[in-house]
Image 1: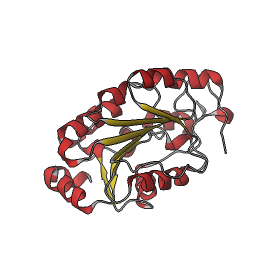
Image 2 (image 1 turned 135 degrees about the vertical axis):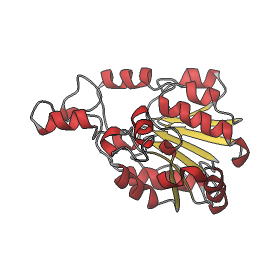
Image 3 (image 1 turned 90 degrees about the vertical axis):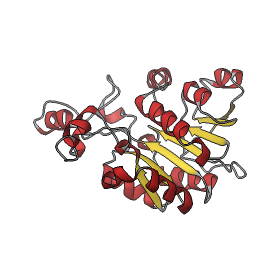
Length: 240
């Protein structure tokens, strides 16, 4: 099933999806652990090609719901496919060593179907790096509680009845969602904390979810790779 979104929204999201904080964190993590992974990567909901151009892999695939940036990807010798993750996916795509899925699941009518597709593409040895926004931030939630705001947390100018975000994830709910397809799931936000998280950690506490960025995770069914992750980042274990 294809979800039709306003043209103005598509134009805004394409121009904004370049090197976000989360994408920069993914690049840092992949670069620091390059020997853990094979050589193929796919980004779903890719937007602009900035991330994949910089990703340290030779076999690169971009997937999006339309071909807004097709020419830019092809100019960089990056394979580009138009797919709607709400629909059944074509057989034979993959396997991939790494999949990137940032700010996508909240837009989908059937996010579980998309997660199953990604898990199938990755198989037992691949890794998913994913992120969804936190729509339960304290300031916004208080405004909603006291009748001062609608529930739109992002996409200024949109209204509740045409909000492109169809899902709202908590950290706990997002982890449970990932666990339906992946045995090992680790919060990458523990490695790249926000300013609020850093201040709380100075006094030995974890920032409440309403002061954190959205859930950001590494997910894999490769137990050996998961062990490497735990060993290297053992000092962050309390946050996993």
